Length: 442
Image (cartoon, rainbow, N blue to C red; front, top):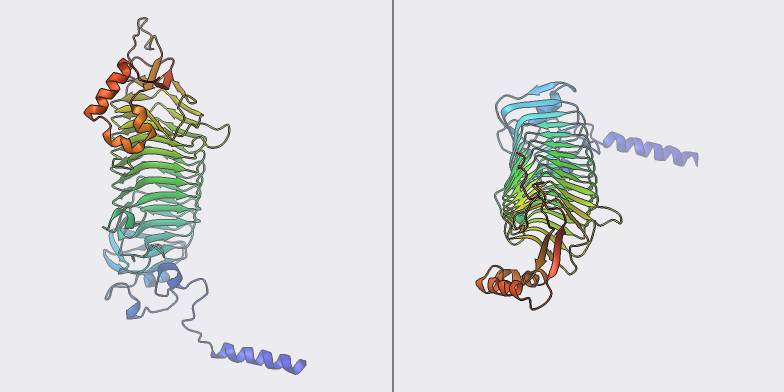
């Protein structure tokens, strides 16, 4: 037995001696796994590994910088890919461009407490399978500020990364069709991040999935699919954002406890155009927003979903939409209070059977209210009631919406109101409607 052990030990020693000392990759540092190609462990990059021929490889400067120091880049173009695995401030002054050369991910931030500021990231790969991006964040308490992310598939991708600050960045995806673009910002299992004052244009979505306690504030989103899409994300705050010309402004799906306040959502048009949507959401608040010029202002589908939970729609301006609020199904538990409904083709709609009277309408301003205010208390003397006449056709048969507002449908609706063929359906009853429209908050 003893001589066998000696032979095994000697054999292991021979293998160790035969292994190359230089250039051997630590198991957690292979750049091919993190950025799609290349190797950060090599002391000198081979020409075939550079993203753009003839450019200095930024990884060398990063490796040479002391931990905790500042790497101030001179104006110019630098080659990616880069993996940052130590605390460092990299400042490009707005004139340092990091190019990926169309391969993999341009920059991977795999540390905590680092700062990327004033950099331009461009030229990621085009693979959705490997989520090619301008920037991958895989650490905590980092700051990504005042950067530009252009001509990359995905912009900034955070996975299992907490308490980061993403502020004042500009993000644009590749100029391809909407469904083939990548997300501008994606949070995946990432908690308590601050996403503030960013501008995302011509990208696909801003995604918050399985991520709790984040703040999304003062951002601008244009010409995307979902400006902001929550899924299985709890207790996030969305405030003071502006979302224009997207298919959907904000969509809250399988999510509880989201607070949506003081946002402007405009021109979500087309067949699926929607300002704000709830899908099996619970205990969420929609307050002080302006939802204007959308096909559907607000959609509530099987919400609130959890027993004994609520959805609160309060003090919003819902104006000039095809339908102000539409309810899918007959779930009760929504409070609609203090809102301004004006200029909508239909203030309230429904589909999927059931009614809307299980929800509470209170103290809203309705531009089609036909009552009076004789005592001058700014409250209508009689209740506001909205009945569905011919509208019930397109509510129950969505394909019939094509004929909505056609002369024949208008004639049918007039006759229905004059001498109903069947009992109209009560859609809304607001016992104390506002008689005077409140001032719109800026």
